[in-house]
Image (cartoon, rainbow, N blue to C red; front, side, top):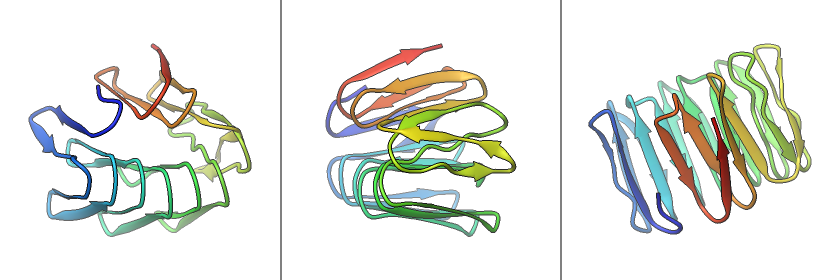
Length: 160
């Protein structure tokens, strides 16, 4: 866990963040211009500022805070972002949350994104739920993956 720059290693997958970062996941290219990136099974990349993540040819672009791509199905962003998931389009003008595999995630501003018929509601910051793991963020974001990983950039609460 880190409040600013962070390096997270999950399942031997290595991701390194200091400030400006380029992470290569199984040949996939993910570039972040600030704070953090996390690599999980090579599928997941998280960044907390300006980031472009390419996963299995799926394209996710964020102009500000964060975007996360998991198995090409999931994309979470906290400012201006357009994420393309298997041809599914999700656009946010401000804060956004996405629901993966029927898991429910709620956030408190602006956008509702529907992925594979799953509904996600936004109010402000963001809560992302992956595989039933619960993560709640008060400021930037916390992501809980298989209960192994929790990354936060600011104040965070995590429930699992």
